[in-house]
Amino acid sequence: MMGTGNGAVIRRIAAALLLLLCSTAMLPPRAAAVWLSLPPSGVKCVSEEIQSNVVVLADYTVVYEDDSHGPATISAKVTSPYGDVLHHKENITTGQFAFTTSESGNYLACFLLDSNKGIGASVSINWKTGIAAKDWESVARKEKIKGVELELRKLEGAVEAIHDNLLYLRSRESEMRDISEKTNARVAWFSVMSLGVCIVASALQLWHLTSFFQKKKLI
Image 1: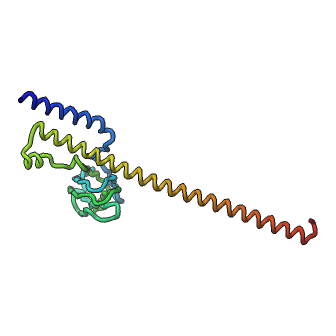
Image 2: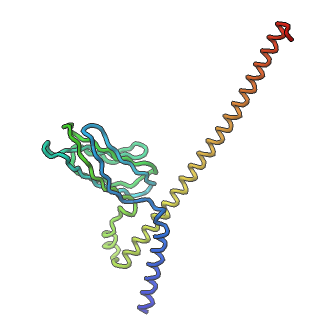
Image 3: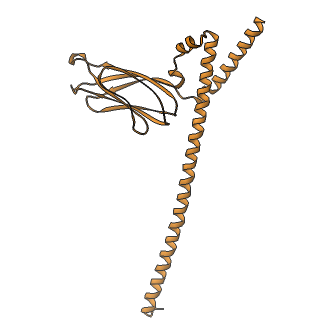
């Protein structure tokens, strides 16, 4: 019985791995480390397109380029696609933000040096979304799973993320197709109207020239 149970587990793992490997190319990166070089004045931003109902977790740290002027502090601001402020901190050297997206679109994180000492600084941002932002250690403690079971849960979560991403891409493709069809219809109507205007203008010009020549008794 133990051999049969182990064989079933191995088959499940193999099937999950095969599905994951076949679908990984369709899944965009969910965790990324980004470096931003901040100028002495001005704002630097980084954005990511995220679908709705996705967990986002990020931490950021200032990396000094010149310590002789003292530690540099920054202001950080994160906004949603509709401009709602999700995170805003000032005079900090390190920070973290976490939220669950409520709408699909580009989420923007902007950073600004607080003091203008003529020197710049860099910001290291560790940005995680979706499956990469999930705390698997807490899941393992809560559900009392470990080893193979935990790895299977991770694979299941990755497959669900791929499925959700495919549904999101399908909805975006449908939206783009609708926009393209509406644009083509408007262009067609504009072409018909332009042709009608040209025909009317030509007819009026011909009528005007005919009337002119008749008055001059040239025809």
